[in-house]
Image (tube, rainbow, N blue to C red):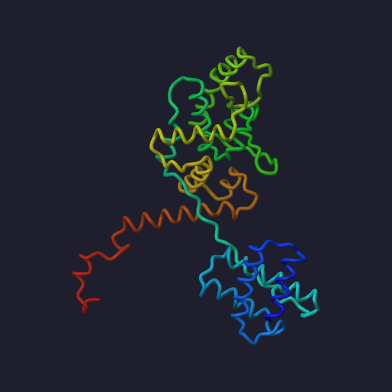
Length: 316
């Protein structure tokens, strides 16, 4: 085993041209496997069962993350393919071993009050404030991605039916209903402030009228960077978490819908998720909130000194 490992690492460095850092990472993972199967192990002395046991050992005993364990298994896969090419083995014991999948972190969401405060943070009649109010209301009220928001055109919004047409990933389009607050903010923006910004820009030399729904003072479409910068400014104004991002408003949109009884398929359609498993992660956020509410509010959720003192050993 040791000799084959040395040959494989030399192959990575000289024939495959991997960097020293990469070769050292392979060596570290493969030495772990060699130690696991035993000092007297040979290149043909292990099978799928040993590989599966090794992966479980990495996760349970060494406490490697799923990502690190998957990387180690990938190194062993490469080694086994090398053994096949060199005719040291006639089978690949890693072929049927599933790679550990990293658990997806739960999305961070704003509570309903914070989301509402942020969406209504832009105040006044200045055209840019009216624009920003409409953008924030749409982010939270329709669950749009920021890339979808800044690429909206005037024709993508139907004020009569209260629908916005969003172009998502893969250039797929979907229709999303607009809530009353977002609809009112859009009506206010399109009633004059948008035209006012374009008129100002035209007097400064703008030659081509923009089709973008949201425009800057220069008459150009709002950018993702500009939207992000404005969001941070309004978050600071109302005292919301400074780490807030446009995507957190999208997360909040989905979570708050589920909290109030929306069905998962409807939320999936509104978010534009191709796979419902992507949407299901928001149900975990909702369950966590329910668990926390129960732990904080129910008298039987945790033992209390009063209950412990009142219960004698013989009475239990």
